[in-house]
Length: 292
Image 1 (cartoon, rainbow, N blue to C red):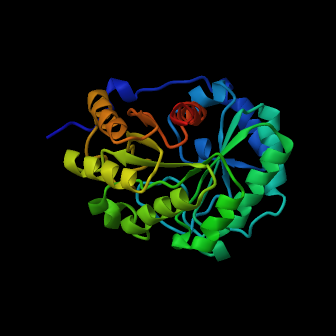
Image 2 (image 1 turned 30 degrees about the vertical axis):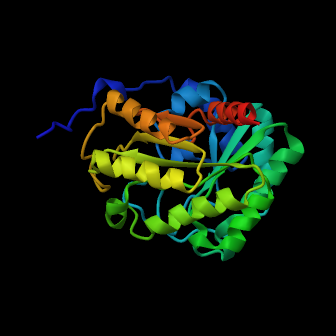
Image 3 (image 1 turned 90 degrees about the horizontal axis):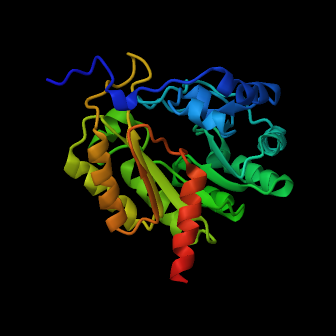
């Protein structure tokens, strides 16, 4: 049996709290939430040091209760109509060239909060020169809601599949594997030039063949960008880690994905869905331009 009581060396990170304080202080002043803090991201030091952050809109409470996620479930507050303006101010103040915006899942809202995503994209584009990436929930597969996000024309639209088909009931009991694939397919078929992106975790008990099946399923939707990272249990109450996947295996998965035609793939233990997102966009743009 594998010893999972200690993290392997490749998962050990350290950072000086002063490196993240400026981003924290700005988010607090503007009453904004960041995934970096709310989800306990291991890359918070590295990203904050270069003035990067992934903003989380629509509150801090999620209407779903995924077994892998550190964001608290519960009854959310109503949307804040001033949030898009404050978000654009934060992007401008930080001098971001690429802004990533995600949210909790808001099944309580009509359209799942799609209109707020669109307002945030427009606010950022109107007041800054940043490219914009949105990472959306499945919005229950509502095509009208997806159209609302698409119409705002972000450079990247992401929706995470999170794990392999077999583990959905345990990890994502309120989500549906086929629905997430259908969302990616719809985004790709109807977007006006936006790149489509997804991410998933390994280390939850999936097999190698299941991972490769997921990569094939995602690519079959037309998805352009893919990120793979190691699952790390936020607390003892969450799903346990079944395996620490080696960096070498991540490279194998990356090679598999690239061979299928993804424009950019980030795959290593500490990768998260928005990790090095601006670099992935630039790589995708370059590859797309080379084919024109």
